[in-house]
Length: 168
Image 1 (cartoon, one colour):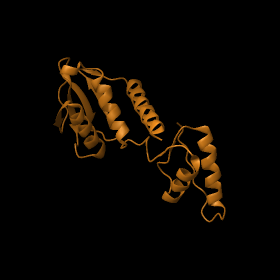
Image 2: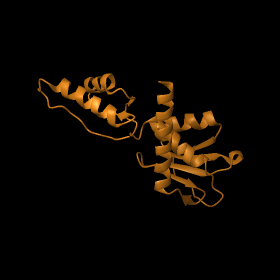
Image 3: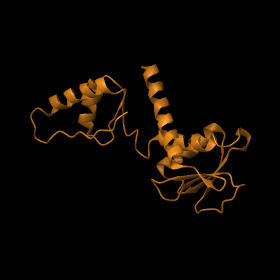
Image 4: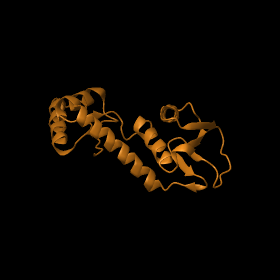
């Protein structure tokens, strides 16, 4: 998947022709396209002419795939019978609500706290969302490596793409 920024120049008479050509080119090059910051009219043209799935903001922090990936990252580091997560931060933020809903669906016990709690080896998994847009994931007293978190995000996005392509 590639993230490209494309904005036709305002007032250009052939702007839609450029968008259509661009969408067709992207459709030949990629399995999907993420149109997070495009105008609605440009996004519609890309969807119509690319011939591949077009996602709205898949790479954004607020996309459901991001919350599911964070949950997966924490759960795969705990035994199924011990899956408990402490959530620190504003539980009303969109990503936090998605995270909580996914946890409920998976049967994971979630304890919401507004402030950090002391961590040691016996502390359950923790999603520290006290700084929106920069979640820190912990298991016990060890922070999960950022690279491992990003790898989970990539795997969830790939699964979403495969699901979309199989369903098409």
